Image 1 (spheres, rainbow, N blue to C red):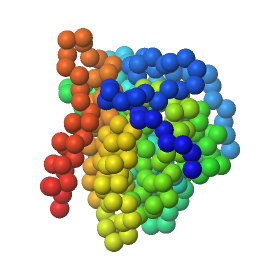
Image 2 (image 1 turned 45 degrees about the horizontal axis):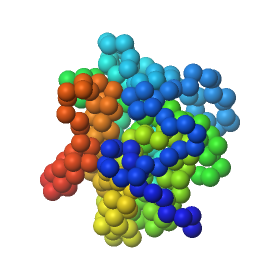
Image 3 (image 1 turned 45 degrees about the vertical axis):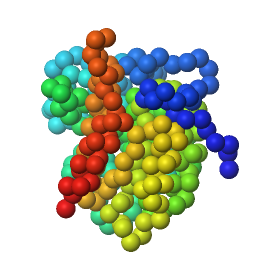
Image 4 (image 1 turned 30 degrees about the vertical axis):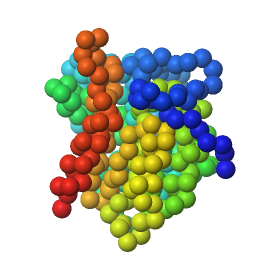
Length: 267
């Protein structure tokens, strides 16, 4: 097992920062996006349009692949975690409000979908990338980390190995992603109560150790799915648009407060 990592500090939590290799990166609102063309890989989806460095786009511009919706600002979000933790199902639930039931089919390489949200009166487009969790596709997904404004790191509450591998994923994120990328930990498949092997308390403890916001989700029932993406959108929008005198958006507090409401009010 690799040595423990210091706490994550992507959210101004006051904890020690994980430092990436090389020079320190700028704030998330000024993350450089590479304009170099990415080589096509066998069996992978062709990358979509590049998100500008600070996520800011021309107001009123139509969303590419977003059904004609207009947006004011756009950000790139990645779903990462072991194969089978439910990344694709989480994305489909958020994008289409549907659940992918039936035989499990692993994502090959990488794919993406767009969705435009109304965040405090502003149209925010999330370009969400669904990555393959298998080791053989890691070289494909590594190239996409550097442009990501936010990462949703998933484990499966019915699969202890996927939870144990979170530290390895954090090591990979430390190496390839921007040091201040917005990062959230999600424990997925909480609808499978009989098969659960990872307690909520374990997820909360791990998230606290690294200074990460945390919630449990279910792509099947929709529990906290919209909340996870909305919280990320709010944080990214605030980082890119906040005036010096404007109070900082508290992502941890928002997730805790809204997560309690959705959990107590679910059917």
